[in-house]
Length: 258
Image (cartoon, rainbow, N blue to C red):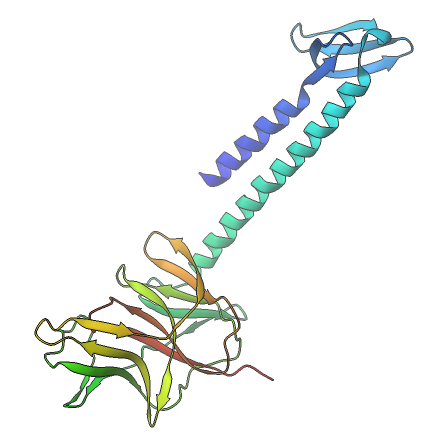
């Protein structure tokens, strides 16, 4: 459908460009397809009457005619360029989407090869206990402070590009992004939770990395990348609903060459 529309627009623009105004010095004009200067007369093809006609050259404003034609041609060329660029961007995006699996998860394309990020197992750690964090798990019953932690001090998933382009296929329409993980002993902290007594309301504190995001399809596929190069360190792509301990985490480490 997009390709057909583009071709129709270009065809319409070409048709319009074939006809132009041949101005007279009194300000009126003939709509013509072409004209030829022959001595002191100008021969032109009238679009209105579909035939060749002639008139004295000194009655015509050829300078205005040429100036307007040049401006129209430049405008048409610019518009055609925009249409073609949009069409190319559409085709490129379709090609991009075809590379990414529809299964929820985080992915990268490196050297035209798909890289799949493994989901990290995370745990909620409070003063009283440390339990595995499950997606859509019930809210904690304890009050006070807790942390969402990822096992191991360092990720085995090494990324050398400080501004990686990451594809995220969401499993639900939730908040998502890139966060910085804080190493603490043999774990890395992804989220600091404050749990309000009685109501058990959970307040999240995550170290979000400013990112650009682009939705690539209607089924919640996004491309995300940091606004600025990230420093070497521990990070993660996350999907979660604020106030619920349902964070999904795909961890990685930036180790850019120096």
